Length: 200
Image 1 (cartoon, rainbow, N blue to C red):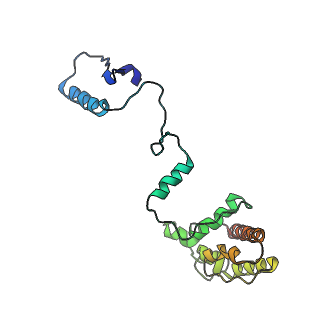
Image 2: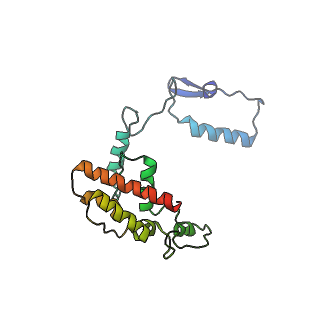
Image 3: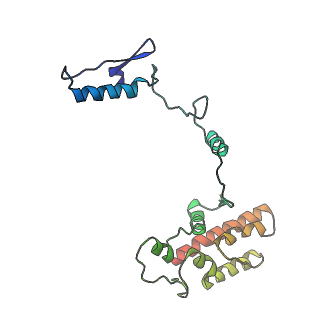
């Protein structure tokens, strides 16, 4: 243990070596001096070891302090952050989150990762390359699903050019905040359902 080899005497560190051989050769002695130089200046105190968070005077870690440190540096915040909805399970919302970043295993994405794909055309319509945007926005099967959701929720027709447009629909839908949250939950569940239909 470190405590067996180092001792704190008058605020100075003293080393207590216990060598099997009494004499060190030139190389070993050089390595020992290098080691002493590296650890000799260490600030070692008595007592039990503990973890300390260097960005807080008390040494205690907190998430709030991490946020404060991150906000103190000039970092670029994304223009739009994915909005999570606690009315749907995380695994359901994850599909929409990954679709927005084009991180679903659609044929085009797999091909871009050098995974052999025989046919890059959409499994549903067979007309266009299969990307997240096509699967959830452009594919006429997806458009039929969105039309049915619009009719069921009695909201204005959906005009979407990409996945982000679909994920922002609830902000423009009429009704109270609770209704908008419910509509957003339906949108997220629709992403998950469509991905299950398409085998993502």
